Image 1 (tube, rainbow, N blue to C red):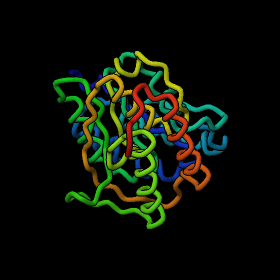
Image 2: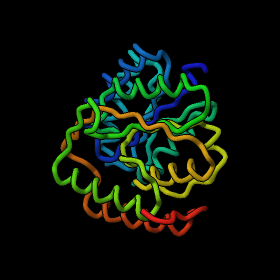
Image 3: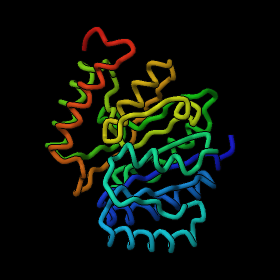
Image 4: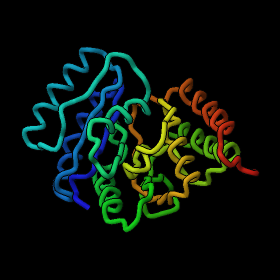
Length: 247
């Protein structure tokens, strides 16, 4: 598969500072390890001043990394899932579609490694990063987020029967054909859940790769957003093609 057939979207909402710390080393890692992987930043309704600043910084960075595309943006915050889908729409020819969070918690080397794994795959699959301390990978999380993640993981297993150790890690790659053949509804953080549920319903394998990850201050997943994510998992249960029989 041609390496240029991969589109990596970075959704960003009020996250310009962390994004611009993450983006240069990410561009360098992808160029060094994979050659041409198209990178698309989508600003999801951040303040106009931040949008102008980011657009200028990205335009400057493109001089060294032509695979980095001009920034996409819109004025109203629509949610992470909406931003990812808006970015994926910019390259309808890409065979692989990927996204990574803008906060830089996922090291650029991990992003490059997962994309390389997907590109080398012999069959279509969903590839996802997972944060787990059960491997030799280093995972650092704030204590309250660690507890919240464990509770949410149990809730997802109960409601949806998704038995992954980590459904919400912000690094995933899917085949374009899988994405293009379906109508997607989730616009927020529950987009990850919808993606995994649809993969299960169609029999598409999901390959989880443990990654190093270091949480950084300034997360956009506020307590209200976390509660909305719990509610979304319950709501998604109502539309499962084959409802799970238990936790």
